Amino acid sequence: MSQQSAVTVVGGGIIGLAVAWKAARAGHRVQLVDAGERAASWVAGGMLAPVAEASPGEEELLELGSDSLRRWPEFATELAADSGLPTGLRREGTLVVGVDGADRAELDMLADHLASRGRSVTRLTGRELRRAEPSLGPAVRRGLEVPGDLAVDNRVALAALRKAAAAAGVDFRDGRALRVRPGAVELADGTAHCDVAVIAAGARSGELHPGLTGRIRPVKGEVLRLRARATALPPPTRTVRGPVHGRQVYLVPRDDGGLVVGATQYDAGYDLDVTVGGVRDLLADAERLVPGLAEYALVEAIAGHRPGTHDNLPLIGELEPGVLAATGHHRNGFLLAPITADAVLAALSGAEPTATAADPGRGARPVSHDRGGQPCK
Image 1 (tube, one colour):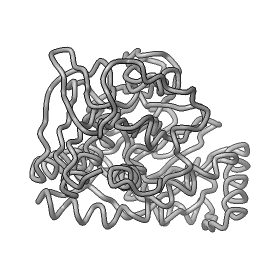
Image 2: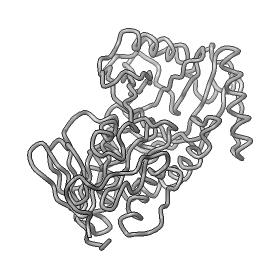
Image 3: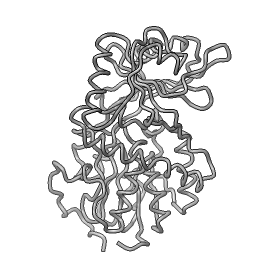
Image 4: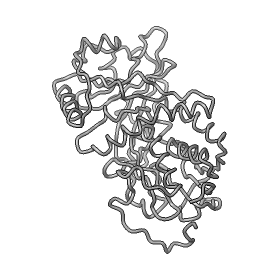
């Protein structure tokens, strides 16, 4: 693949923007096609938390996420330089807390699992947690401090990426992609020709190429955005996450006194309604951790679709010559953006795959090449 390949990226969320920016920066001629729909990236909490979200059986995801997290500071520095805008990166760290006996047992299991993987976390009592974050309530009895897990303001980062991509020469084209094949992205209003197409269309990616059919599913998540009013206590400075009576909840602060509370999780197709039950559970669980939220303003209730896979690992790499996948990131789109962009750049240069755990060939059916068009030369 030449250094001046024509690349069409399908999808304008965090992954599509990161790939397009990095590819243009590396000298490729890049077009980004996006239907203008609300991406999951716009809804996201923006946690960069491979350790706090670790789970037994997902060791490859922990390693992939940790590798990408190490790349985030440099990624943010380059993004700030290219865009001239803030990136929204927050370095205060994460607290994982629990309120009842079952929650505390879950925290102990997480700490033991992390220790078995060579990751140490600090166990804190309720009193120690409230010294670190005075907004935490008396129901919080135990927790873990994970200083290395960071966060990013998703909408600030998206604005910076779009500006940096444009400055690097990315051509933005509005349009709905119908199918991707070697050499072309077929759109509702025409065709975008290219040497390489990169599918980064989130939950809709499975509709675009037979190598992704049935391998990406929409996972609905509801998120609330709150704002501290003048009479209310300020939000915590760190990301705070549950469990609360077994339900996971997270509270991610924003620089303007805002707080993102999330997230529910349903396999509900492409439904985007925010439900009363979802809002009720999120507020009840968040208020259990931070009682002062009762005085906050409810600014927004919104839902999005995470692109889920069967093993929660993304699909990053070649589907067939001339077609790359960069999708299936589920709840980790922001966390995995740097490593995904680097992996796509490696593929564009013909280098060996760098994110082997996310190889899209795992469990895939063979792709038929008899669909019209020829692979890129």
